[in-house]
Length: 173
Image 1 (cartoon, rainbow, N blue to C red):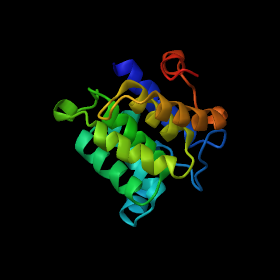
Image 2 (image 1 turned 90 degrees about the horizontal axis):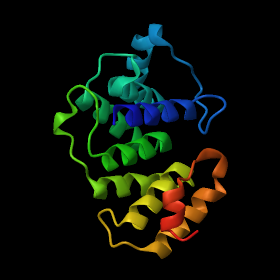
Image 3 (image 1 turned 120 degrees about the vertical axis):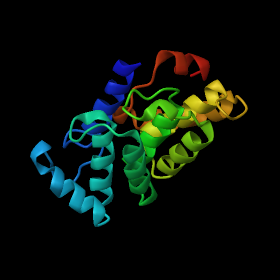
């Protein structure tokens, strides 16, 4: 599980790079944590995302699940699509291997909510999350037709997502 979570974090961080899905106007390294905290406190959604991911185990700051979820939620509420898809994935997870996450509650309704927010912005990762939710009936009635539609939209963003073979098989596409 820790390896899977680490891979998810790496994917989200890759998406912040110049080669990835979302390009940020700034670059922070571990020496700039005070700059990140200041920018986040001033309402910068990208810095809020960076700080939230830092608390979720990227090594920027000491792991702290509660702080991580708080900053990621603030970023997502400000419209950061990467934070939205990240929260969707976190709420799909049954366990989060981060210090303080022993009380993490898997919540398919919240996962769907955040994926829907990201999908409104044509985010392939969020669309793939919705395809997963509907293809597996996670908190909703299983619906292969809706799952296939979300999968089709995610495939249109193919350069930004990897679609697992079990999802492709389940959704009939």
